[in-house]
Amino acid sequence: MHPDPLKSPKKPVNAERPFPRRCGQCGQEKVFLTTIRYEAEVRHDGRMHTFAIPDLQIPVCQDCGAKVFTEKVDDQITAALAGSLRLRGLHTP
Ligand SMILES: [Zn+2]
Image 1 (cartoon, protein in one colour):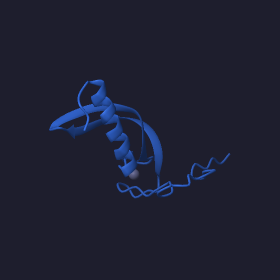
Image 2: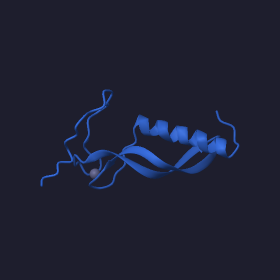
Image 3: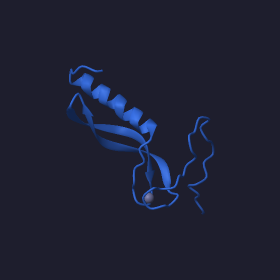
Image 4: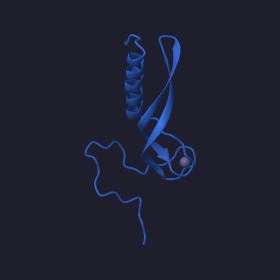
């Protein structure tokens, strides 16, 4: 048995950069798109908001655990913040 995690059967058409990517922390090519639970802290209206995102899709280094924040990650956090504010009855931008 030789499992090969680097081989992926299909690539999304609009992929930005192929995985694995090189890690900015340890230099290993072990950054894979991973779904994690993430506790986000975002400043909004001069206040810090802390909320959990149960299924954030983010590139994570499988070697050192470094998270890579991309535009897509930002979008997910922004969307989750809006949802969180709505839940608390606060106004959204
Ligand atoms: Zn790393």
